[in-house]
Length: 195
Image (tube, rainbow, N blue to C red):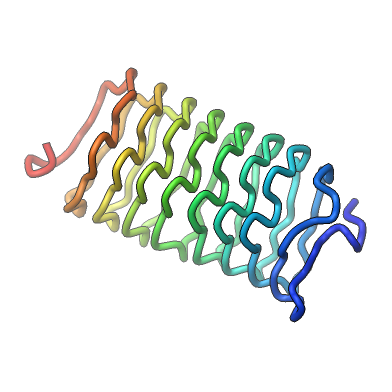
C-alpha cells in the first residue's frame, strides 16, 4: 500500500510533483489532486498499479515516462489533457482508453509502448500528434474517429503489427512517414484526396 510520504506534492497540494521512492509498485493518488506533474512518476520501473481519482484533469509531459511495469491504467473522464511523452516507454502497457474530454493526442504520448495492443480514441479528438504511437509494435488495428482532422509526422511509424486503419473524411492533413515501417499493413482505407 502507499505510504503517506511516498508522494511529493506542490505547496497547494493540487499537483503530484514526484515520489520519494522510485521502487514503489502501487500508488493511490488523493482526491485533492488536479494535476500529475511533469515526470512525476518517471522511471518508476516497478510501478504496476495506480489509481487516478476523478479530480485529476491534466497528466503532464513525461508523467509516467519509462514505467516499464505498468500494464493497465484507468484514466478518468475528468482528464482533458494528456501531454507529450506522458506514457512514453511504458513498454508493458497493453491497453488504453483515451478519456472523452481529450481533444489532442500529443506528440510521442505513447511512443515506445511496445506491448500496446488496444487503443480506443473517442469522438472529439481533433489531432494525433507526431510520433504519438511510434514503435507500438503490438498494435494491430486502430479506429480513427470522424472528429480527427490532422495526423502528424510518423504518428504510427514502426507499428510493425498494424494490419488495418481507416482514415475518415474529416482528416485534412496527413504528415510525412505516418506509416513507415508498418510492414504488416494490409488495409489502408482513405478518401481520394488522402490517397
